[in-house]
Image (cartoon, rainbow, N blue to C red):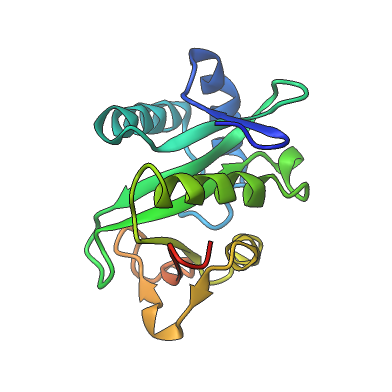
Length: 177
């Protein structure tokens, strides 16, 4: 898929090193329990690619059209952990710091939502993050997603006692697009 400034594509072997660097950056991973090791990062790409094989869509590798620079991912991922709203299809993103502040996450997430409501045939898509992740929450709001505080939850994959455990949930239905 392509947007005005971005290419959203399947993963390549050459993406592994810059993705590992992104996942090792403490600032990028600030709202996650911990940065990822190279092995954990590579394993994540393996899971992402397996999801593409299973569903035909997933978390697309993201590159800048003008330069071909890999900047992270944006796309759709099934969330199946135990929660009041799962299973659910989530739109998500993770970009390198040098890609922040350019509107890339919003631009690519909008394309992912169009895919989710179009070819994937979903009626609702969610997004979630730790309460304090104001940058991602702003992207969710720019996408037209809405939060009901009653949907906020303690993420079961974040250790109890962690300040990152409490998550906000945003939703969007097919009709608002």
